[in-house]
Amino acid sequence: MEKALAAFATFSPTALPAHHIQVFLRVSKEEGCTYAEIEDALDLTNSTVSRTINALGQVHRKGYAGFDLLEVRPDPEEGRRYTVWLTAKGKALKRQLDNI
Image 1: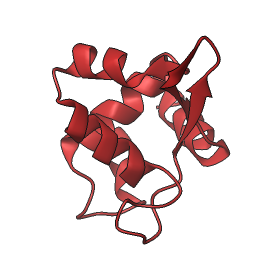
Image 2: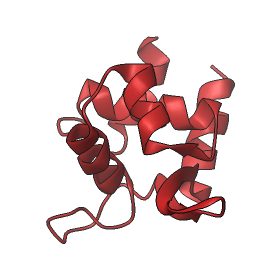
Image 3: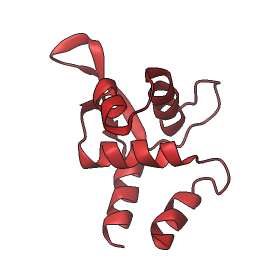
């Protein structure tokens, strides 16, 4: 567990809340999941999931650089819904965690 947390700490030792890690791990288990699936699995609100995904994405909602671990894509089955995927950087972190 200590090694896994250290891997996340390389991104931001003080600014990565536990629910950010939870969301990343949920997406890494099932890429292409929807916001609603993440909300249900982690018992988080829509606003929390949305803000967390933005922070873990390329650009934070406040305009500064995000962690670039996740990306959002439109759901091909439902145009008003979005799915969440790992970026190349996110996949590299997943591989690192898988080897612990």
